Length: 144
Image (tube, rainbow, N blue to C red; front, side, top):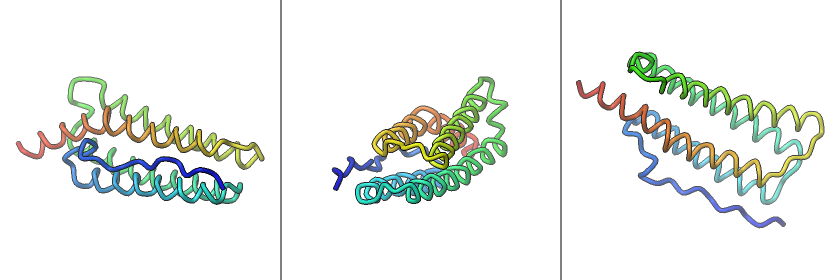
């Protein structure tokens, strides 16, 4: 049995101030922690394919929520390239997860530790450096 990876703890530091984004981030953190536990006991190809499919589906749903908010509040018109960078990060994440899925389908073994590290680090970095900026923008717009 593999050692259980350290879980990602939700922190108020992750709060963006936008309820719909924060709720989805909490679900993502919880899901990644469940994935880490599951991969401690089962690293079969089928499990990895299902996990990456489920994560990609929820991530796309979450990205759609953020992008709709960006559109509704005119984030692209904010005067810098924050919206463009935000969208690029969403696309890069989706591409990476699709690449992992294709590798799995072709029979390539992947390191579950590397996969979890990537997912956790990406989520934390994206929330703290990109989503917080979007959240501040939306909070300011909503208070006008």
